[in-house]
Length: 161
Image 1 (cartoon, rainbow, N blue to C red):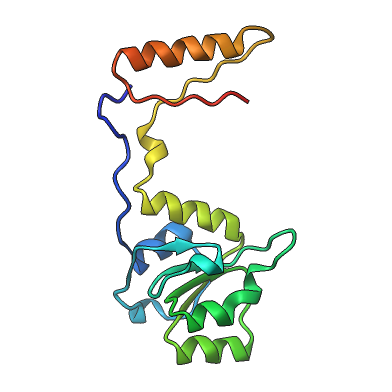
Image 2: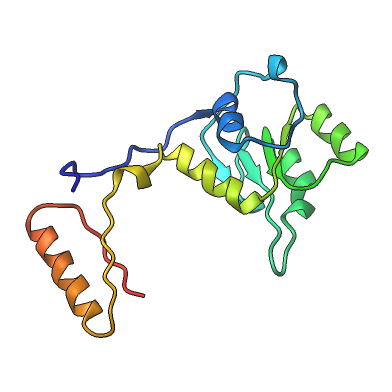
C-alpha cells in the first residue's frame, strides 16, 4: 500500500520528444533533428474541448469520425494531432501552414491512453490493486476491504462490476 495521500502527481506539461518516445509512431511529420521544443498541457479527443497549443487525438467513433474535425481543430490552434490516417496532400499543406505536427499511429485509442498515462506521470504504476473473485460474497468482501483500508488511513477506491 502507498501511504501517500495521492499516489499520482498532478498533470504536467509533456514535451514532443517525450510523446514521440512514448508512442513509437509509424510517422512523424517532422524529422527527428527538426523536432521543435514544444510542451503540451492539454489532451483532447473531443474537438470541442481542444485548446490552442494543445493535442488532439482523432478517434474513429461509432457515430462520428474524429478525423472529420481536423480543419476545425487546426483553425482552433492545436499544435499536435495524433491519428491513424496517412495525410493527404491537402492535409499536409494545412498542417504545414498552421505549424501543426502530425503523429501517425496504428491505434488512436491506444495512443490516447499512452498520452494520458504520460501526462499524469503513469499513476497506475503507483497504485495497489486488489481483485476479489468467486461465486458468492464478492461485493461484501470488497466493501469490507474498502472500509478497513479507509479506516487504516489509506486512500481507497471501490469498483464493483
